[in-house]
Length: 91
Image: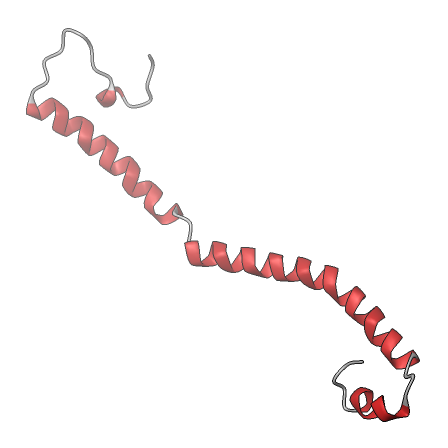
């Protein structure tokens, strides 16, 4: 097994002393520290998902809602119900 970090490669004949293990842990620690700035922001991911989901819902619902409103404007069977459509409360 090849490695870009020979400090992390152990052999069967090698002794596991504290100096050798500390050296390997130091390499791992340095690699992990370099990745810390790249951790995703859960809040940003949730906000992006929410925005995308709301946009999709809006794209699906608005055309249907507009058709219903247009049908309501075109159809008022009884003048006693006229005040509902005039007030903007729907059909």
